[in-house]
Length: 114
Image (cartoon, rainbow, N blue to C red; front, side):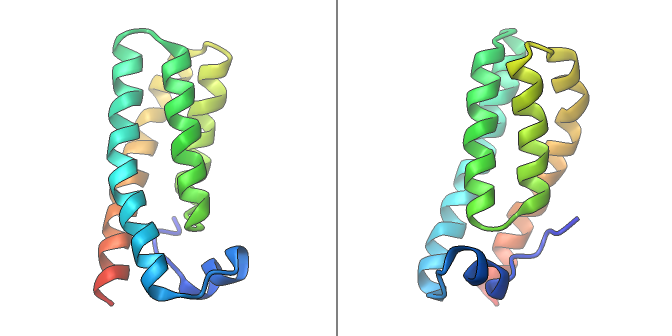
C-alpha cells in the first residue's frame, strides 16, 4: 500500500510544489475521507447504490489529487460496483476502503508534521 504522501510525486502529477498549499489540500482530504466513508456506509444501510456511487466517486477524486493511488483504487472499485447496483460487491470491498481511509489519515498526519 502506498500510504505515504510523497511531495515529489504530487508535484510531478499536479504541478503543485507549494508545501503550504499541499498541507491545506491534505487536510481537506483528511476531512473528506471519513465523511465520504460515512456516506457510503449510510448508502449501504439504505440500500441506495446511487448514494454509495457518488460518495465513492468524490473520495476517488480527492485521493487522486494527493496521489493516494491505493485509496483511489479502493474508492473506484466501490464506485463501479455501486454503479452496477452490486451492493454485495460493495460490502465485500468496504473493509479495504476503510483500511485505506485509516492509512490516508495517518499519512496526512505524518505529512503535516514532517
